Length: 105
Image (cartoon, rainbow, N blue to C red; front, side, top):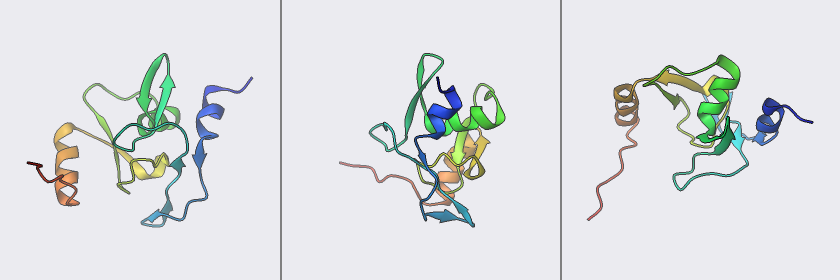
């Protein structure tokens, strides 16, 4: 029987050529949500795959922290592209990278 980590990493495509600062994106090949973020069931809860990748490589995430992407690729699970930040740091990162969605109406 495969371990949790083996099940998770088997769905990460490590051969993608999308690079951020020399680090390749490992794109999630499993289920994803409507925003393009991968999803994986961990400990009975469906979670975003960037959070699962962080937990598998670095351990649990403190309350109130988000797992952010240097690469801005929501399907990326390469732990070298991920970093922790507060909600405000997530907003600041989005603004700095000009990812703010335009209001519809």
